Figure 1 (cartoon, one colour):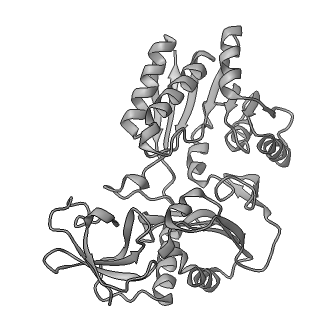
Figure 2 (cartoon, rainbow, N blue to C red; figure 1 turned 30 degrees about the vertical axis):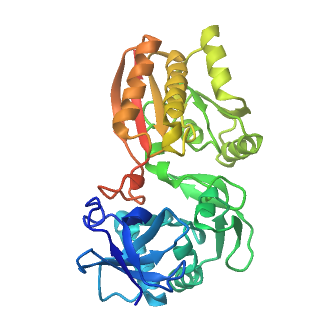
Figure 3 (cartoon, rainbow, N blue to C red; figure 1 turned 120 degrees about the horizontal axis):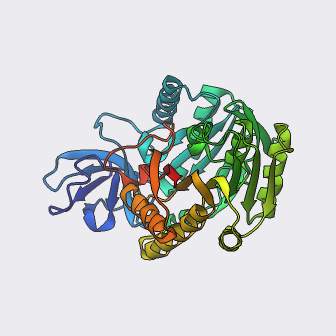
Length: 390
């Protein structure tokens, strides 16, 4: 057993269940502890706290896997955890496509696994979890007998753990452009070249939430990526749908998704800088019944949070100005650094500056296959809002 001990005076966060232990919270750790090792953590007065993996290079030096002193961290442990994650998703009805493992919320810190039918995409974002990648692949093979497993570890956060960015097959090679079905619609997913794991499963329930407001509507979507919201809008009876994204590859995929569902006659996508276009169209007096905004995270650190606030306010102000009186704005934020209260304040400020009155129709978060653990801010990140603009 490799032992680590907490300092006497630390925030109660760890004792209350948070899995992260920062470098300045550790008093001692046994000599010979190697980065990636499983360590047993004790309080300053030698009470058992938990077991987790250690990395001296990281600001978060210990990430706890279990609070059970009898648990044995081995291949069987990870197999049991994967089975538990799958059982939870089955209970909720997320069986075809889902986030199978959502990191800390599933007791597997810095592990992401997305399930697309019979294909799986995995991210091991910390050294301790990366060491168990063969065991994780073995567990997926045992539980699912998948057609393919792909690694999307081409993310900068791994470098903070002393890990290289990389991607590739963790199974026999397969065609990485696959198709999935969501809410009765078909979508292309590129697990090799797409953003993050190739598809944003966290909005799958929110995409159903637009079905009534888009009927017989002229719809504008910005930051569309591969067009999932816009294709849903056309499917739900929109009169016309135009989607904008700055990425030519994303627009190509979005138009292919519209065609895949036989909706190209009223759903199309164009390459454009949404900030510039929405501003100029507002000055021209263009308007729509529904405007949908799903921008990327405008910040990944607290140092640039003011930049994010400015960006969210600006894009929502521009979107509101394009909504016909009585129409709807559909808007999202995907960074946990902008919490729900702040996000709603930003939308309120945008409405005031646009001189439009709004009333909330719906406010919710990510789909339940991305579970939220109270007290762990990083597990609650998505804000999804529909307001009527008057």
